[in-house]
Image (cartoon, rainbow, N blue to C red; front, side, top):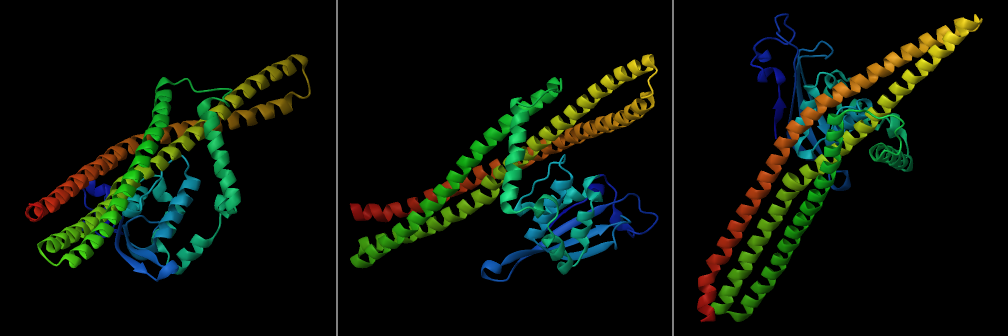
Length: 387
C-alpha cells in the first residue's frame, strides 16, 4: 500500500525537479507517503507498522527527506492530538486510508503547521513512543473521567440542538438548513451502517453454515461410494469453496462498505461538536456586546454625576471592548473554518460513499455470479442421480 498526495503537483508544478532547500523552489510543499505495512510481534503484543516517508522544503523541518516507522497507534495519537487542539476542523480516519489521512493534514494550510505533525513525521521510534505515552489534556483523565467528559459534550450538543440552552441564536437560514441536514445525515448514516453490519454478519454466518454443510455432505458421499457418493462429494467441495467466497466477501463488505459508513457517522458527530462550539462562541459574543451596552449606560450616568468612579469605569469599558473584539474574531474564525471544512467534507463524502456503494454493488454481483455458476455446474450430475 502506497499513498501519497501533493497539492503542488495537482496545480501543475513539480518540486522534485529541484532541491527542496534551493532558493529557486517555487512554493512550499509537504508530501507524505505511507507504505510497506508489516505485522510485528505475536499474540496480544502484535501490531502493524508502516514506513512513512516525508519530503518537504518547509524550513521548520529538519531535512528535505525523512523516513520513519510508525505503528497504527501513532496515527491514532496524531488524530487525537490534532482533534484536541483544532476542534473546528473535521478530522477522521480509516485504517485502510491512513496515508490519505496524513496527507489531508499535510495539505491543510493550518494543520500542517502543527508541532504534533512535525513530531509524528520526524522523531525516532523511541521518541514517538514516549510522546504517545505522555498523557496530556483530556487524555490525562482516567477512563471514568473520559466517559463523563464525552457524556457532558454529548449533553451540551443536545442542548444546543434541541434549543434548551439558547438565550441568543444565529439568525441565518442557510446555517439552519445546514444544521438540519447534518442531524438528518447522522440518523440516515447510522441506520445504513447498522444494516451494513447485519449484511456482514449474514455473509459470515452463511459462509460458516456452508462450510459445515460441505463437510457433512462430503462425509455422506464417502459412505455411498457410487455415483451418488461422488455427486455428494462434489456438492460438499463446492459448498466449501462457496463458504470461502462468502467469508471473503464479508471481509470486503466490512472494510469497503461498513467501515466507511461508520467513519462518516463519527465525522458527522465531529461536525455536531463544532456546531456546539460555534453556538457557544456566538452566545459569548452576544453576551459581551450586551454587557458593553450596559457599561456605556453606566458611564454616561457617571459622567452626568461627575463621579470619581468614571476613570475606573472607562478602564473596565476598554477591557470589555477588547474582550468583545476578541470574541467576535473567534466567532468569525469558527464560521470561516467551518464553512471551508464543510465544503471539504461534502466533496470527500461524495467520493468516499460513491466508492463504498460501488464496491458493495460490485462485490454482490461477483458473489452472485460465482454462487450461480458453482451450483449450475453441479446440476447435470445431481439430475442424473435423481433420474
